[in-house]
Amino acid sequence: MTVPSDLSRLLDEAKQLLPEAVKLRRRIHAQPELGLQTPLTTQAVSESLQGLDIQIARGPSTTGLIVSLAGRQAGARTGKTILLRGDMDALPMPEDTGLPFASEIENRMHACGHDAHTTMLVEAVHLLHRHRDEFAGTVKFMFQPGEEGYHGARFMIEDGLLDADPKPDAAFAMHILPNLRAGALAGRAGPAMASADRWMILVKGRGGHASAPHDAIDPVPVAFEIGLALQSMVTRRHNVFDPVVVTIARVSAGTTNNVIPEAVELEGTLRATSPGARQAGKEGIERVAKNIAAAHLCTAEVEIETGYPVTVNDPGFVDFARKVARELGGDNGYIEMPAPVMGAEDFSYVLQRFPGCIFVLGVMPKERDPSGHVAPVHSNRMILNEDAMATGIAMHAAIATRFLAVS
Ligand code: NI
Image (cartoon, rainbow, N blue to C red; front, top):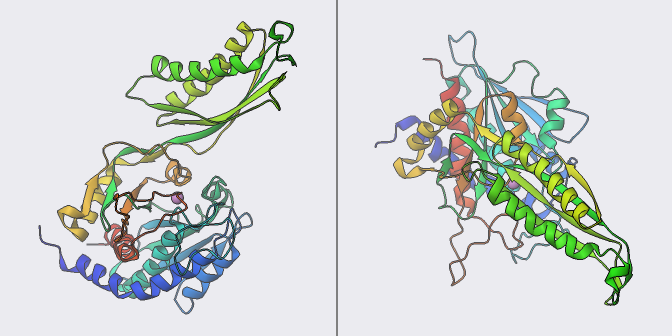
């Protein structure tokens, strides 16, 4: 397949933007920020966009920005609007990459690549600004803090930033993946990422002497039984083609060897890729915990904290984005994801409002350890191939120009 000249030109220009992109990404990487307030990152974005003919909107709940760029295609009277999104926040964890531009703040790291997402979006503003005579309508760039569990996208929606005129007709985002070939794009129609709910179970019995369990009501074996029964529930109550993951990530009880504690805490996550499986999973956790506890004269308090919904890619938009990705990178430039990823994304809130999709961008590092292992996202050793950002910059620009082109 030959690559049409206009999209290959975008890729060439994106490559020319790489030195600026690398500088910006490293600046953001060294100063990671958490949660809904990312003032330094927002400052870096604003500075990088100075002098451009754009409009910037802000809301009260986050330091996020909506940057609007209007097309100026001659003769076009009206146009559509597309939203492109990049998240900005980091993770509360140490960085052990040894990079010269590693995090300067203890226990904070851009281990999920949001520094690259923000940078690619900034450079896409520049690229599209340069080409604004070639499209009609509006590109809205959503610079969003608080993706790592803080519901930043939902807050920006609640602040009215996304629905402001002109309202987007579609939305697009990318997430880097170090385990995928650098520069490759991947996606799928339908569920792309899972819902994620946090749950806690408090199993209560009666404390006592460890030598006389019959005089106490020992909650420890009951908690173990609940833990195993939850896995039986996953395999026996849920259709394997509508998957659910229940992971017990924390178990906490007791103080010493000769005391039966009064209570055991279990905490974990529930993942699903359909609303039905998610609901059944929530009900199941409660039913299993309470009834097993009751069978052994204990009680179980169950608390479920609702997290991000399932991220659902619109099939029509995926068709469109897939074609653009293939035009940009040739037939090898796009890989069909065989299954959803059970991680979660708050871009799901955006996709509940506007049709669109999230794609994955491969950023496999050039140098790897002898075993060939690649540190994944959320690893303290996660590194990425910065050259692959050129594909991300070009893809954002290509999606926008193609979507907004008036023929
Ligand atoms: Ni992420």
